[in-house]
Each structure stands twice: as C-alpha cells, then as structure tokens.
Length: 140
Image 1 (cartoon, helix red, strand yellow):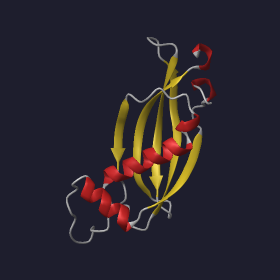
Image 2 (cartoon, rainbow, N blue to C red):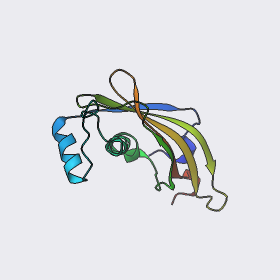
Image 3 (cartoon, rainbow, N blue to C red):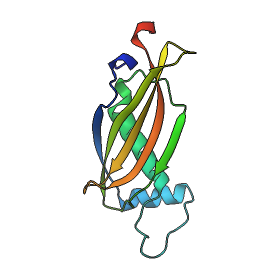
C-alpha cells in the first residue's frame, strides 16, 4: 500500500493500454446521448469518454495499491489532439505537488497531471487533478 509519505514530487508513471474500438464508441455515444459528429471529425471520440478511460487506467494500475481518500476535484481538462477509433491509449502521470492538510493532518493533498497519449505519443487528453491520500503515520 502506498501512502502520502511514499510519494515524491516529480515522480512519473505510465499505465496500461486501451484500444478505442468502434463498438465501444457506438455504445458510449448511444448510452450517453452524445450528439453525432458529421464530416472530417466523425471518427473523433468524445472528450468525456477519454476522461472515463483515463480514470479506468488510473484505478486499474495505481489506485488499487494507494491509500486514496478520494478527490476534491479537477482543476482543468484539455483535449489537445483528437483521439480516433483504432488509437491505442496509455496514461502517464506526474506528481506536481504534495502537502499535508493543516485542518486534516491524517491526510495529504496531491496535485498531478494525467496525460492520455495515443500510440504516436500525441496527448489526446490532459487533466490537472487533486487527490487526498492517507498518511501512514496516522493510519489505524
């Protein structure tokens, strides 16, 4: 189990492999009533689906072994390049800052970037996120 004390500002990680399939795209668009895109960007996938994929990769590869206490939110999301059906995505993270909360010393707040990249290394989604992590010294 990784606690707040185990994290180092500047550390980076790469996680997973997720292929964007036409079937999943159609299911997502249908299920969540995403408006159809016509023309040159018809094979572009919705940005919020990319956020879901990034979270899935983070949960599967990082949070299962983290003393996570949830997230107070996301500061910003960018979609610098369109993701397309057939792309294979990988998630990378970089820890930007970490501090103990004065009002809740049993936990720390971390800020990180999460970048979803396609097989060519192009960023298709980037999120600046916040997370609460339990401190080992105060864990019961």
